[in-house]
Length: 255
Image 1 (cartoon, rainbow, N blue to C red):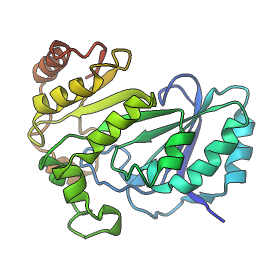
Image 2 (tube, helix red, strand yellow):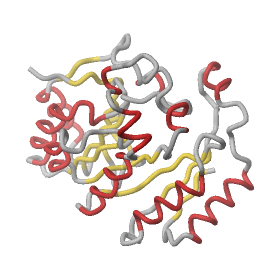
Image 3 (cartoon, one colour):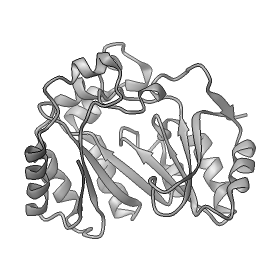
């Protein structure tokens, strides 16, 4: 029987997609982003997690009705558990609720096609493009030759498959919002914004949520890695202005 390792569940949340939603945070990620504010969910196992069956989560979700519009699965990286979530989403839809996935885009699109078909909307976190991803998101994961990171160098750093995944989901009408964390020195900020603007050119209704990176609450070792990468407010404002100049209609800033 398939089970889902869950780090925590927020019964009612209004920041993970439209409407009041039950948010489920899975344990385990295929990346190791230095600024991750849920870094406790990165290891595939951790003390205190609970493994849920589909029926157990369904019972919990039913208990939150009629006060929710749907559920959002975040993490960690939800798409790692595509088989479980496909089954869960199929049953949640029978309750008349919507199903969202919060993702970093580092997935094999063909492999998770069944999950894509069952997902109403994705909240898509663009981590960047280019060699900087190796240090920003794949440190340790690539160095340890983790099986989850098989082919990541070629797929996401050289081929930029995560951007192709984004464009595919846009054509299917499955993107609700894009996010980009502004960090200095680990990717070419303007190049990333231009690439996002190209992707969004036919989708003016979809917002880009631009977030200024901060280190509050991060473990000390991560703060050390991120020294000198926090953008000034003026630099952040300039990037937001640049995004608008590139034709992105809705730029939401979180400074």
